[in-house]
Amino acid sequence: MSGNVWGYRETSGRAPGADLTGYKVEATDGGIGKVDKHSDEVGSSYIVVDTGPWIFGREVLLPAGTITRIDPQEQKIYVDGTKEQIKNAPEFEREKHLDDQEYHGQVGGYYSGFLG
Image 1 (cartoon, rainbow, N blue to C red):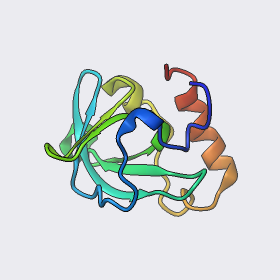
Image 2 (image 1 turned 135 degrees about the vertical axis):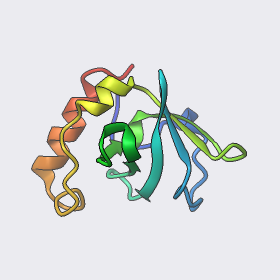
Image 3 (image 1 turned 60 degrees about the vertical axis):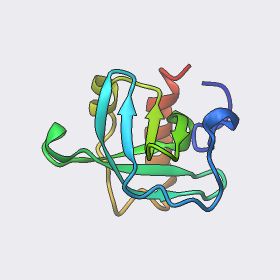
């Protein structure tokens, strides 16, 4: 992926200030859960997805650059990546995701490796 993986794509349809909490999240091959938390912080935007029973209640951190489209009417977010790719992402670490640059580098590097 060219550009910053932690910024929303211009084509995503992101409306600044809109609350994405509770939106369903769809990988390229099916649903993966719902948004538990999100941030629009410049250079560090992300969503945290509660995967529910899909991967044993685990949460995953998805940089905003993974988002291909947001549909506010259906309350769905479409992301670039398969369920397997997202399942294999670095473990979400709630205490580190806000300010640990090494952790951000690890997560960002993982996703930038396969995003189009």
